[in-house]
Every structure is written in structure tokens, then in C-alpha cells.
Image 1 (cartoon, rainbow, N blue to C red):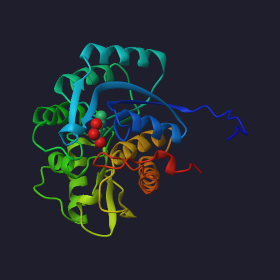
Image 2: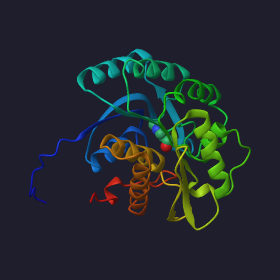
Image 3: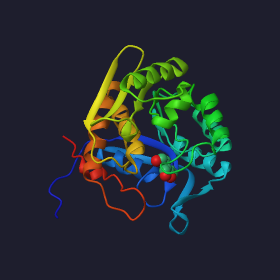
Length: 276
Ligand code: PXL
């Protein structure tokens, strides 16, 4: 390949506060690749390091970053740049949530996109109750845009089951009522039917986003990349619904172009979506 042109475009500067997922499918790595592909300058403050264990059924080995080290990263980042848009990914503990919330409150934000990561694909629900409570109490009120998956939507809406498009709509409305944020509830492969359905609701606009399901197995990085794409588009000035539509198309293309992996999930390829 050769370089045929140079850009004079000044990119939007975009921060993700997220965990590292070593295989590069999810987490901060997915966020940064998404930012780059959508033309935003990506910055990361790392909250934790996740290394799957192939000797133990690919279970998660989770190492939190010390709260002071998280605070130090955010001090450097927030001093270096005038930021107005941030994405929040995996926090992993109430102490991390406290540290991040304290740093966020030192400035004004236009967009705080919360991907309320409670458990990762393949993990058992239930071990993260204290993190769940801290997210609800501390992060939900700060968020301007929330992207819960099926499991997180049950937790944030208080609903017992989410099995249909109508249930997704109800969940989106309840989570909006709890938070005041724009909400994109993701049905993913957890809902029956030919399409992968997400429901957007911001108090005024309600829209069902659909794309044909590509296989029936979840792909690693889809949720992270979706929220990161929303974040990049908001940083570039898109309206929330417009950002959600672009992000859905971005993720659909990335799933189609996924990278095979020996881990239980293939990895989304952000290069599958070409910017127009
Ligand atoms: O996909 C959710 C996710 C987010 N962030 C990190 C992860 C995972 C899932 O594995 O490891 C760091």
C-alpha cells in the first residue's frame, strides 16, 4: 500500500474510560479502533485489565487498576485537552466508579455515554451486585446516553423478562424515566427473530433499529464498538438518534467482517465499516 493523500481535517478528541481486554475484541481496544475508524482522536484511561484464561474455560482474570492510578490518568487527560465527550465502559468495582465519578464532576460535559458493563459475554450474572448498585446510584444520573444489553436492561428497568420488541420499548422508556438520558436498548441475539433489534428512546423520539442477524452467536466487541461509535459521532456533532443509526450500521458491518478466534467469541472488525 502507499499513502496517496494527507488530511487537514482536525479530529474530534474523544475519551474512553474503560478496561483492557487483552485479546482486543472488546474494551478499550475496541473503543480506540472505533474512534480511529470514525475519524476521532482516541484517548484512554484504563480502569482494569481483563485476561481470559484459556486453561479455565476462558474465564475472566480481572485485575483492577489502583484508584490513584485511574485518578492520575484522568488528571493528565483532562488537563491536556478540552473535552466535552466521554464514553464509560467497564468499571468493575464500586471504588473505580467513585474515582471516575469524582473526576467527571470536575468539569462540564456535553456527552457522557454509559455502556453499563455489568458482566461480559459468557459470565454468570450475579457476582457483580455491588458494582450494579454503584453504577445505578452514581453513573446513571451523570449519563446523557445509555446503551444497555439484554441483561443490563433487566437490571436497569426492573423488568422480569424482556422477550419481544414491545418489551424492549418498555425497557427503553423505563430506563429513560430513571435517568433522563437517551437510551439504546440492545436486543442482540437474546431476542428471537430474523433481525437484531435495538430500541432508541430519548423522551421524544422512539425508533426501532433493525439489521438482519448475522449468525446467532454473539460477537465480542459489538457492545463496546456500538457505544464507542455513538460517542465518536456525538463528539463530531451528530444528534443522538443520528449517532445511534450510524453506530448500528458500523457494528453490523464490523460483525459481518469479524475476525475468527479460538476464544468462544469471534471479534468484531472495526475496519469492516468504511466511512463515507
Ligand atoms: O464486552 C464487555 C467488556 C467490556 N470491557 C472489558 C471486557 C468486556 C468483556 O469481556 O473484558 C474490559
